[in-house]
Image (cartoon, helix red, strand yellow):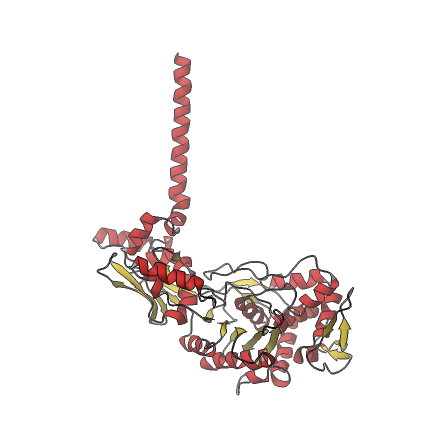
Length: 475
């Protein structure tokens, strides 16, 4: 009997020990995750009864909290609603959080480890808990220019300081009003959500960071980078046949314009966006080198920062024909505007790609700075020598090639146009990526659709003027 009792006691003791380890582990390692899980109703009710911190552009709140006599003590408000929705995201009782409202939730609720002293001080003084505020990297003038440029169009704009990775503008159109989802009239939020989901224009889609599209000829920057990293120079001669037949097929890879001869320099191939030159170049380099170069720029993984993003992709196991198409940004290549801004930024910054980020600093409820962002390098996609050559090639695109509408007096601007085929009978995507030396900014503009006649849709015609306006807004 005593042996059986000891066995039961030992088993019970082990179960209690396992329970204590689990509870201790949850308290130490899982608390933040559980608190930030939008499905946690208890925490959600407490949050809606708390003064959530502001999201700021400079001193201007783009998300703030006001006292309320409704269902909860505080109401989340978005003063500039749709324009900044791709940055703030929404904060909704039923539908959770998105964008900065999600990635910086611990800071905004004051539950982050960085704000522990403020929490203790507040508790000892008898004050109710309050969230911290975050100051974004966004430039209001650049954001306004991006938002205005997208009016009447589906698309997105991303601008970033290529020396630090700070995102200066992030616009997506069409957009939505986060106030409709933040209301305490929960039945109204349900109706608003259903309407947004049913909208064929997909206003909830963040085209800037969370959707990927064929990048078209802007991807030729990646192919050019791979060439420069593997022995080519800006003045190297490359094959540029008029009507090259894709390997193993009877399908030609046409050029949109005269490439200027059967043999042209790599610089001229970029200036006129010669498809056959870059298709043959990609096949010659091989898919492993093109894919490796794309991955160095960030393809294949989401950005590891406070930006909610999805991974861009370069396909695998390609035939030579598919590789040729992929080398000009077609076939199954897909990238977000953020990704193409990163490609441009890495080139502009002498081959050094900085991690993009949105939060500049965090202040506790007592206004003390609890954290500041320190820029960090994400990768080294190119050598400085190769990057300088590609920068010069991009300047030639703006001065002598397809990107002339992005010229800015008093500034050096490099760019690349892109017009990506979609499905037959529909307008292509229009792209333009650019960098400038005054200010240090890289921009990606993507136009998914517009009222422009299908035959007049080009990256140089539609997207380049928007990039120019965004750059000029910051000068």
